[in-house]
Length: 284
Length: 320
Image (cartoon, rainbow over all chains, first blue to last red; front, side, top):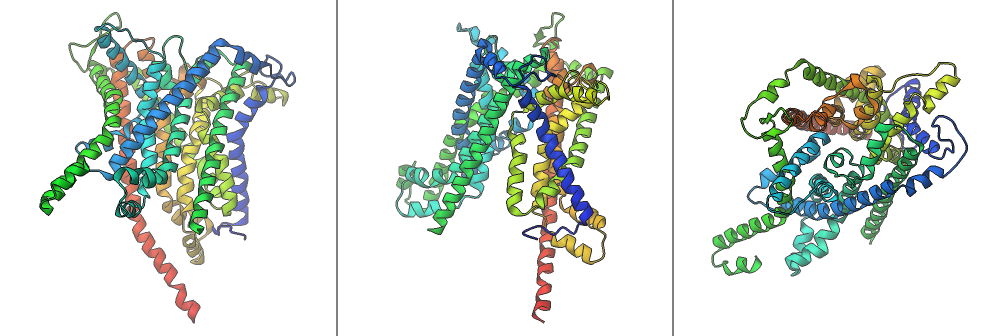
């Protein structure tokens, strides 16, 4: 039994478990696989295989609405990730190592955007922007829903996710390393820059990746705070599905799928490189 | 902040006080940008929606922020809305139960593989977990459509077309498909930490395989079961995308009903009251989970002690 865990189950039960596991894997992967296969279908009828073709990808990428939605999605994801990584990491550091007024209130509030359902967050922000615009408009400038409201909303939930991930990393932090740096006459800033930051970097990277993924995935909140002419790709897909299934949608979905799988595999590769690098330093 | 700290170091006590003050100021400085952002773009909207839930809807569908009343909360008692909430709770419970039934044996299998196999299988579970949720729901929609591949297959096999889309069954399948990994991952974590020598001990004491499972393994993985159930129940109960894409008129759930109040129906106060209700329900669910989670941790301590004893016992035997 090479490294197998002894669970005390009979051989028949063990076979059943193994069979079940592959059924579940099939359940997880078959729908996605079917979608990908049919995105290369030359026939415009979704249930008939008419040969292999890239036709629908071409049509999707030539569609002005789709390319503009992709652009909006990427801009929103980049901006919301950048801002929430900075703000979320700062909040995580403050909560982890400082006592200050309002700390408890902040500690409680930071988890709320993670817990409450998307739809409530969406309607909250919709009402908020409507009221805020009414107020601002009375001073002159006119604002409307659009790419900036989507980005502002994404930052609002991403700060929390980044903060939670970075805090988990800070929990395992060895504070004696910072003390050693201070003993060696490093200034506060030098200690942070040379010791603290590199050590919590994997947490920040993981938090950033989560923020990026959540921003690219979000459909409910974006659907409510997007304005006319500026929707994200998921919002476009969502409203198109309601109108019916088209091979073009299969092609876009496959592209979105490829993007998220690339992100996962990229992060896993990054983690492995980090893990092996830290092993090497331990050997040294 | 550092210089201020040093100049006031005349007596140790005042120096300490100044250091604590500097620390407080530094913490506040660090937290304030993020805190301010949350205050504006999260706390203020949350407060606003609570205020809206007490407002009046005018005959034109506008919201009048005067004449505060609890009409919207009273309207929740309406048969239609009670029915929608009941249906949402039922579908979320069903989804949670199915995820547990499907996910537990699956997680059990994953957690008992050799280490290197486990790592690969875990990646295979993580990929759907990180994959765009909307695309996954769309995949189910595409697969189950009346002229989709599954229907075509069943027609070719002579079973005729099947009409499953836009039924509660389709919504349940979609929810299980969307949230199954939320159940599997906490279960996997608790099963992976499991001390299998305990089931072995039960077997040595002539417990049958199933008895060892029900009396030892299952109670010891309770924290994973509770955490997974909350992680599945919470998003299923407030789900909007899944029932919107896979459901029909018979599967109107609370998430879609709230959305409708802010879109076509233009009854903001009612939608706001339902949102407040949903948020409170979620907070209660999470608080209950945390309480039972800390209870499980409390239960961990005697378990660890017992485990220590179990390990200590064979040693004299080995010596003799």
